[in-house]
Image 1 (cartoon, rainbow, N blue to C red):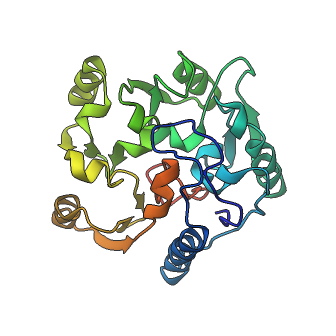
Image 2 (image 1 turned 45 degrees about the vertical axis):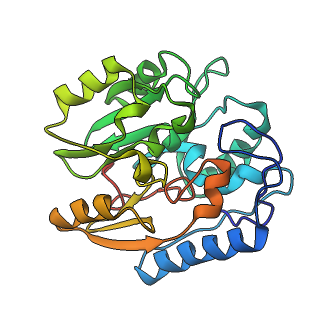
Image 3 (image 1 turned 180 degrees about the vertical axis):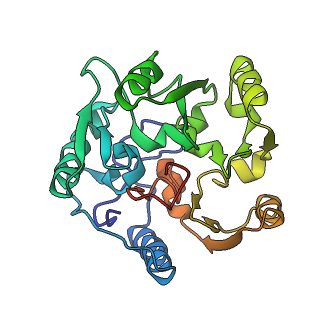
Length: 264
């Protein structure tokens, strides 16, 4: 995780953003509550030093895709975010990860735009990732990669509209995907559960899964009720100030160890 010491909307690269909209004190308090929540759950959290010229560096999930001790470093679509990856790459190097990179000509935005579902990798396209990036990831990691086209600019990253829960179950916001990608999901996911518009815009899908907990945004009663029927315990944290930059709980969390999600 990365402290939101310099978090602010200084530019507009998605529909959520409005320059100067962030309450810095409120944002820091919310981030700190998420950080303390993980610690209380027994989850070790490493912190990376924020940089004053990189306000979106707080969104750790976007920085790379991890499989065991290999990481594919992100190559951000917008120039405003590209320097963030340098500092995260140094962190990964210092923590003995095998560093890999996609071609400089291709855009790739890490775990914000690619999500593990067992041994399969769902890969978003349409806004931030380059066309065909799933083929590069398949080659680099030796996994089955499934491309899903995003069509709603409010859901520009896959982790804002898709939440893999277990080997059979995936939550999704239907209006975020193209018709072809909806058909793809229906074919391969046995238990595909839609999220309603109100809860989708409250970042329900942008949750973090542990072995038997789901850390999720406050509110979203239908989403949480459904999770409980699958035997998961719900941990609620409000990070709504980060919505103003287009991010939620998952965006703020760079998962780098097995056992916290479905990438083991």
